[in-house]
Amino acid sequence: MGHKRVLTVQDISCVGQCSLTVALPVLSACGHETCVLPTELLSTHTGFQGPAVLHPGREVLERFWHHWQREGITFDAICTGYLGSVDAVEVVLELTERLLKPEGLLIVDPAMADHGRMYAGLDGAYAESMKELSCRADILIPNLTEAAILAGTPWSEQPEEGYIRELMDSFRNPNVILTGVGLRPGETGAAYRSEGITEFYSHPKVEGRFSGTGDLFAACFAGVLLKGHSLPDAVKTAADFTAQCVMLTRENSARRYGIRFEAALPWLIRALEEA
Ligand code: PXL
Image (cartoon, rainbow, N blue to C red; front, side):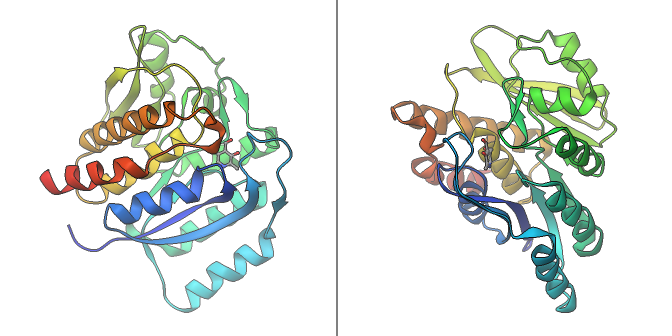
């Protein structure tokens, strides 16, 4: 598969590995030219108490992409995660219209909620703007909480297969990957719908909460898919990679420092070479 220029748009959390500090190394390891648009700069992710936050604001973000437009820069894929403000979501809607190649892919991880709650600092107005961006995605990658919010359905902590299938069917996107779902006790994984068919991929669950796993899954999925692998293969590789990283992180008592993925990168690179 030829060269791909990928834009990843999300925050930089300076401490607590998630969002850009995960997506950039993973997309690079997959062999893509990776461009970044940091929509916010935080001293830590919002799982720490009271991070210092710097908002570039709409005007600065617009100056960045207007410059790219003047230079004729376009992208094969735009991958979005935690954006942090309604202004940033609106900027992304506009820059996607202008800078994504006609055959390019918009991959959206709503990255706004987990375990039944919105992330600290994000509100209903943010969820509404994320709905608009999500509707445009060629591939939408919500977790269960985000999918329930986007679909306007009550969240279920232990969903049955019927609930998951109904939730998946409520989205009009061509492809949807629902993360953090397992059909049997002690399992987790992803449900994915591609070409109208919903399938499941699961593996044993490691109990506990691990920040950054959604960001890691989305980056790995995008990286593998953009290498030319099928959507089901990219889901499986991303799920296996994420499971390995969760095992590596489990050894770490201070989980708020985020997901430990570094030691698993050689596995990912080999998996891409072998396929
Ligand atoms: O991992 C998702 C994420 C990304 N960015 C920031 C966050 C979170 C989750 O808490 O706080 C700033």
